Image (tube, rainbow, N blue to C red; front, side, top):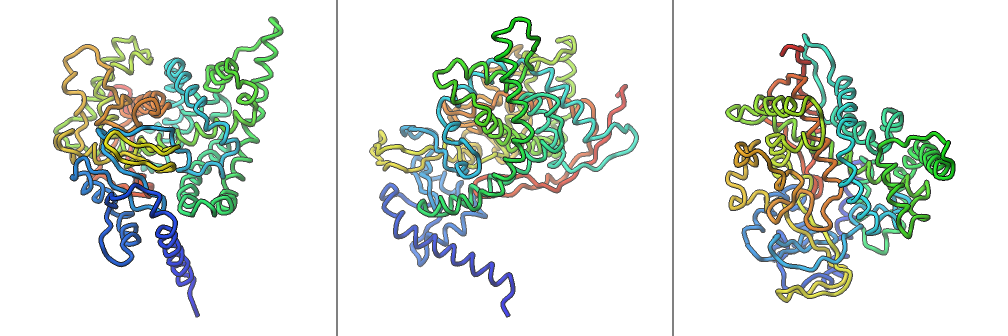
Length: 504
């Protein structure tokens, strides 16, 4: 009798063989000619072998490719990307919205994926994000105290990933939608489960041929859509009431309504100034947009926050990382009369360096600047990109290049702050500033619009934790794992924390 494992392995083999033959029959002519494939050798089932080899050894493969300077390669994937170095010129058409296949998991995706939304996010978060620093700190204080405890005598064992996820999600929603919903456990749990689900669904659906995706996507997307329906039950009434209050206040001066200083309020204000205001301020559309913002915030914030904590705790004792961070935070806060603000955070150069180095050393994604050619184009060096060609930059190898970063394989917490420790001001090379050799958030006009908020939230989080808690060192640092091109942190690793006494 066949075991369940035999059936699973058999189906997996059939899926791989189907992908291989689909690749040979339909895809071979859709990518640039005469370019080498990552890891593919002249052998039977070469592409399939390369695909199987690349998945668990992605960093090593990318580093090997990077040594061939200036030579673009094709990634061994069911739908490959053209991998180039940052200094290779290529025309950017528009961001590829296919990676997570959100058309099957997020309603109104065709509307909120428009460039207008990207521009609105940049404008809103750039102009308004700094106005909620004190509110975010207040929320972090309450959530951290609950997660990490207040006992100054006994050590507490804490799962870093789980605690970070809850802290990040609560703090993010303090800005996104505000209290009391930002503290509703069922609401936050629904968002968290949804965010955890859409990434594997996207990877799975994208592995199928285009003509199969509409069917496969609708089937695999059912659990995510169910969670989204639960999520709407919580925030749709809040959104509708908010819109009604704004409309009422606009026609009745006696209507007492003070809108919360939240992303929801900022978005409605800015969206209503656009020609598409009627369409993009419908409650259902706003609800979908808020879920997209939430998913990005919890996914990236949890991963980065987890790695920051482990990197600090496992850093070489000669750096005196925690002591140096505490000294800087105390000094800057004293100069600011204890007030947390955007200007206060901007002066914490060492804290910024730790965040910047974490993003370099433990990347969210090995590939950035992922784009799709929307028509046939020819690059300046004569490379033909047919319509539909995916293009990406291997930021992982750029960040591990010794020419860009000496001792690149070592986590150096103050790598980016040493040159500025004796200067009184600097913010042009902060943790969110992209360049050709620093690409965690992309580059150019399509760089991540939420990076300002992510930076603020994470710096406040690290500052609060290490100013108020003692944490036992970690050695060796718990290792993450690669899932496709994403580098995910260990989800079960624990640390020992204890509340610092007030006179500490």
